[in-house]
Amino acid sequence: MNQLLDLLKTYENEIFIIASIGAIIMGILVIFWRNQETKSPLYLKKIIIPPIMMSTGALMFVFPYFRLDGQLILEAVIVGAIFSLALLFTTKYEVRDDELYVKPSKLFPVILVGLLIIRTFMKTILSQDISPGEIGGMFFLLAFTMIVIWRTSMVIHYLKFKDKEKVE
Image (cartoon, rainbow, N blue to C red; front, side, top):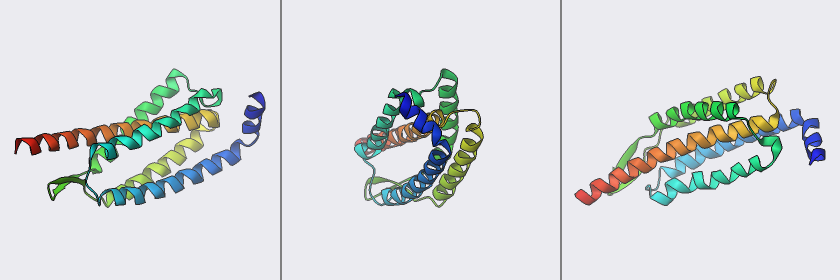
């Protein structure tokens, strides 16, 4: 295990660059995925499966290299909650053919790119004091917090819609 940690420390700059490129690619994929998501109606599985699948990433914390102390966890969760507000305020819903849809948002790609720029800037600053493994853990937790809050809001909207549908 120590050899792996030594190897990771040797290539920290390269890992930082690769992770940043990976974040940009993931951001582009999310923009396309979100655009496709607006073309089909919402249903519960579609809302809850992404955070469940993403939660498997928490297995990174099995390895000491990625573990966070309480302060870093709190910081990541707070920043994730703040960033989730951008998703919450730009997600609008509409009813079509008696189904609930997420409205396409022209602001979503702009906000996502803005969040990626902020993330990269934060990562550059944090990398001076925090190891790349901890930064990776923090940004996973930040993103997971954002997604869970956003998807919880979507579940609430979906359930309210279904309750209204039953009443009518």
